[in-house]
Amino acid sequence: MKTIGFKTSHPISHKESFIEFKTETPKPTGRDLLVRVAAISVNPVDFKIRQNSAKDTILEEPKIIGWDAIGTVEAVGGNTGLFKVGDKVFYAGDITRPGTNAEYQLVDERIVGYAPKNISDTRAAVMPLTSLTAWEILFDRIRISPEKDKGKSILIIGGAGGVGSIAIQLAKKVAGLTVLATASRPETMAWCKQMGADYVVNHKDLINEMHKAGFNEVDFIVDFVDTNSYWDTMVKLIKPQGHIASITGSSEPVVLNKLKSKSVSFSWELMYTRSMFQTEDMVQQYHILNKVSELLDKGIIVSTINKTLKGFSVENLKEAHSLLETNQTIGKIAIQF
Image (tube, rainbow, N blue to C red):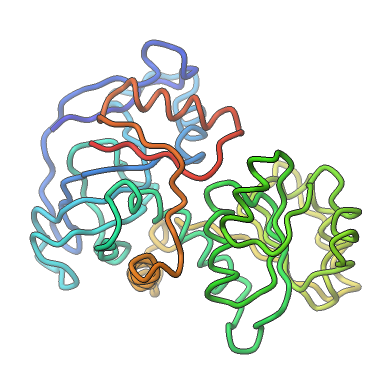
């Protein structure tokens, strides 16, 4: 099968930042599905891993990355029971295994969902990773309840990015929250409004912008940009007994004691936790993706796609990575095979 990967961490402009090669098509065993990939999307995690996973070394075998795909089940392992050959599926995969930048891929059925039927492959392909991340941060980490929390307020830092775009929709359409999202450029502000944000506030003067919107504090805050840069601002803006959650990690310790007087909770979210550690509730991602698929088919939420590249090629992967590395992209980028 055709595969695209890299042997060392080059800048994206380098001629071997990605290389095309052939490898044996794998055979599924156990809980694995063999999927023929039809379309993928590219996420910030892709370029971060490309930049850092093979620094100052040359790998014996090229590393295959990519964590978003839609395709058709071609074969199943002996212990599968959720899918059959011919099923159309979508998924984000497992960061510890070869990724979606290949014509075929093995993926554990417990982290796979049935693909939406009413939208295109590319529109569906961009949804798994960001939808899982947004769903888990809202409903598994913060544990927002549409019944008891309806009408409460949430601040989404980084509203126009891939995760922010779907988090706005889930917070508004599923949880029934009042949604404030950060953005600063006219086009990103318009995008957040299009996704369903009630208020769009400029992150460059966030506290004053929140006050102008009529909010001194909010019930929940999710950070999709930079935990430490926004920490003191989040501490000021969160209500007593509120909840802050982040996906961005931190190069320095987070000063949690600043939350003590308000009895505020803090959570990390990593979409790969369930697959990395083979958690007992790993199959929850199957259920989340099926719910997201249903929401997409009913038009309750919409795809966050904003650009499509046609053809599974080194050139298109380089273009997608180059665009993402600007940190100026809105929504998601898909590559149609």
